[in-house]
Image (cartoon, rainbow, N blue to C red; front, side):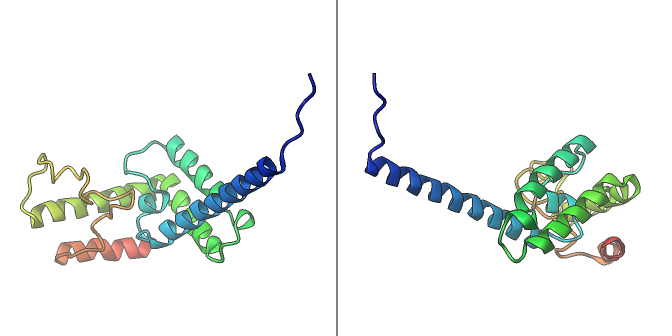
Length: 163
């Protein structure tokens, strides 16, 4: 049985699909670069799109995945080097036990301030941080960039020292 020669229509369709896949890939890279640049700079969890309490192996895995996606040599986005540097800094901070402990404490303190400010309980649905931006990491915000009382300002200053 002889193999059929691909029709010109099929070749054009495959070329269009390849171009579409390439464009989608570039779009995903650009979207991730934008997400990293818009993440709260002092929250390494938000930069890596992770939640606090995650094991070191997951941090390394997420860093590798994102660094391969946004590496300046693999994308033409002019903001890629800046995003890549922020990603590397976030990974370095989370891999340092002392810095990570300090960040976790700041996030916990900011969470408690928000719970107190909103008059929630720790075990209420709103106080758990599920789906409402309370608790930090994953782009939800650590609370350190919102409305803060005097105690929170001290925590914010401590975070700035880390950055």
